[in-house]
Image 1 (cartoon, helix red, strand yellow):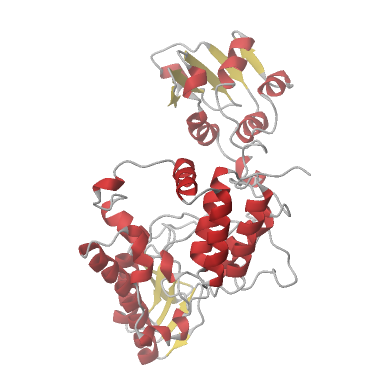
Image 2: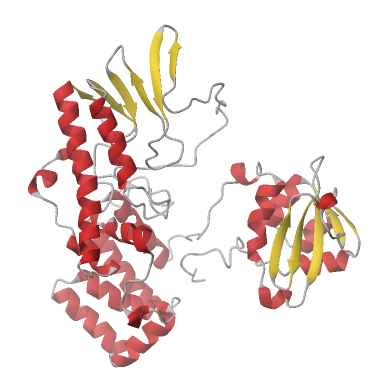
Length: 429
């Protein structure tokens, strides 16, 4: 929601440019009747196709399709702009090696027409060759220069400034920085290659973000001094340092409207000049939240998805919400009976919960069984209602001690409740 302008106005200077996504209507989805394998050839309505499944780019279900009769490729490896080698929304690592292999596959097939999920068509064998080679070279440049920086002892936070694009990359219109932000690509490659530790013994043990901010504010002479230093950084043209300074104050007191307003001003100024539409949307969306123009949820799951999740999907995710201190010495197994599905369960042993896939085959007899409707289980998962309300609803019943079941379920944090599920605290007027 933050990355694709979903919470911003549709018109005016803060409206989306470039990518905008709304929650899709998946009611028209049709399950494939043929699941192809890598290299498989099929003739469909007299047209020859060959399918390649080993080149996953931004998801793990990618198809690269070759139509030899047309010398045509359908692909998602070429995007037509600077891609997200790492997505700020926290998606899986996108391996430059795999992506470059897909691009070289397009070249080596002798492609004359390249049709791409995100990019404009490229027509002509030489044009396709030059385009995919430049695009692949960009990926390899980022990867190789990141590895070089690591060999030189650079830390993760240094890497974004280390990458300096050669002129021919900067001049390629299909590598314009309107989508991904180059500065964010190197650090995830570092973490994927060797983890978080930067080889500096001083960084083995860390302060919490709040404690570090408090100590730095104290060292700089207190909040007023930090504000003055931030104002001086703005005069010096160092917006990033100014924002960092104000963020130390915000971290220690996120409900302080003075700190929120100053942070919002800096984010907005940066957002309005950024070329990357992703980074722009993050900056301006958080500006709106900091200035109380919208509530910004930390986690969003559309009802259409949650309401169709199986009991296993819901409970394997629900179990991680256990509060170990509340649970204390609890050793309790609660079985869930949902419709005609087999009974599943949650077994809490002293602050840790095991999901039981089939309670009837488990080594321990459940302390209680909760017969619950699918909709009520979704309500429990989403914290739409209190545990007491859910247990009292028609269609739900407890075999065993009802109070014990309510007490057991109260040991799980309400992650989706409005009070908890806020990326930026809401200030009540």
